[in-house]
Length: 291
Image (cartoon, rainbow, N blue to C red; front, side, top):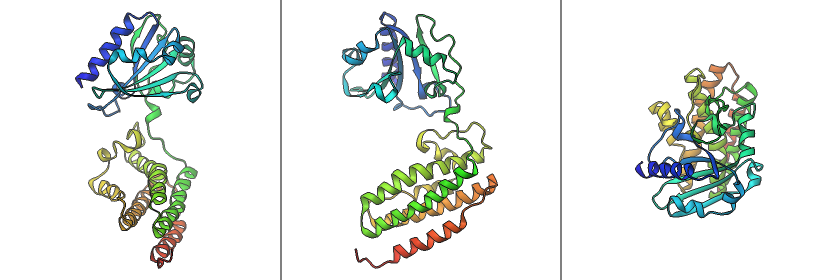
């Protein structure tokens, strides 16, 4: 994206001539070989500053790079004062996440025993006026890799999935679409389906340096057409009957992936839980509407 490259060059030129800025790093997807990159990918810029407070409390410097449409600022306590964040969308549609470090905080991160996750996913030193980055560990990209679950983690996910399907069914029977969507999308999809699909894909690749990026962005790349169609069928609109079909599609997907994974990992699948919960869900769905 030409506008993004121009923004990056503007930041480098500005930082090179600004004595307040001692180092600049580019991080995240643009320097991560495992991440997909396109014209909508953000710039993630880290600034190491002599006086962080000056740039944290004053946003005039942000206007140097264009006309901000929206600025989101994270407070210090979110990151225990290690750094501050200013996330900016400009009128030319380039989004930049600025991370602001003081020199002392940056050096402490560099000297930490383990490379922080934000750097482990990839970084490139653009400017280093004082040699502060010389001892930074190289990224291993392990923080984004899918790891094998132990038997307790696997069982807990499957059992929790089955338990929470009862809330979706109850809400659909009551006509409570808001809570049904909350449970199916915020809880079941995010906390159970996404990790389960990740585990399945990793098992197919022998658990060797495999990532599907954030929240399943690369699922389609790794799944067969048949499994991808099953994943697609778990999405629905506002219609109650559509949501029942999506719930049963989730159940079908979890059964397929869960049983395959249990065989692969040598774990037992909680079939008794599945059988009992299926019976309950059918009971709820077939209840006469007296609500």
